[in-house]
Image (tube, rainbow, N blue to C red):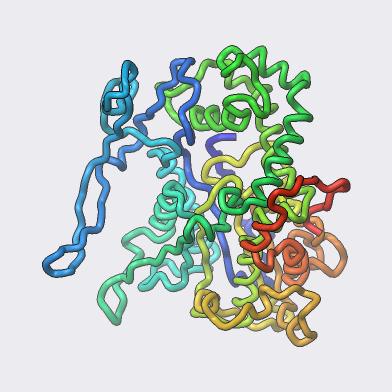
Length: 483
């Protein structure tokens, strides 16, 4: 799937059912896929598809921070970026040009496009409408970003998408001067080094996970390469493939074919593939196989869940528990810039990714924490300051290690997930006593934590080094997700 078509805003009746009066919203964490982008590598130039696309007007006005050597003060430099490449005839340098032979607005590979900036800005506006205008959960204007936690992967398209979304969640006219300083404080956006990143499945820095990924990818190839579905794809687009054949592990890989299809579909007629690539049946086959290749591991293997996405989901739970404990400085809303593999990996690990379609651009998952105001649970506090506090506290400790008093702190709290504004349910929360009476989508915080604890790594980097050189064996019996 390519560009997301957002559902209409909730009706008043839908909103009242989704946010019942006996539950108070306490903490929201939004995981968002970046917006529309160019393909991550150039493919199918043999079809006439240009390698460089003219959809990035932002490169004409880039601002960099400059340190003045004389005064040690900071200033800015505005500049325009143009891409250089090799000429077709030789290795001589030449400017990359658009299909119309212009050197400006040229996107690099995997770059957020103008459309991607528009759709992520629209996401911020929709979040503002829901959580500020209609629910009144966040204030309409702020004098400090202290209530908002901003976190992104180090990939530029994720960072830029986060910035676009924040800019419409709180537009400039709602960011007011602080009474203490007379200016609006600079928002903090948190990133990590690639080696420490768990906001996406980090196969580049987790060798064990990379080996597991290859094993599941090979299984998908073995299952699908010689099937009627693959033959259908070959009849349509095989002539444009290296070697004349489409396969899960062809060149480009089937997932790479999907990447180019989705990126071209999102953009203009200047950058389109032949019509055979957009055959609806073919796209359904490609996405179904892609979902299996990339995400079936989360559905079947606890180790895959633990190394691929467990660190992130453990972080989400830890933040919720810290909020319940009242530790922190008042953060109520988290916005995390990430990727398709993040969203699908997390939902699949929770047994809640029940689709064969790929994650569209600008998709999001809302992880919402509620307090039952009829059971007397106390109002939560923030958790940002607690991230740097002593020890792991309750949040990172397995449920079976908690004492009775610690377990009581979690009572009266519920977790609910929404994927692109549609409620999804974790299967392990359907059992009696593990959800809000009458609504299985509201999982008790204790049950949700217990499910996540099973695949939260204790030492991710150490576990990533385990099993090097060993043959990877997939589980003989699937280890179901979400229980």
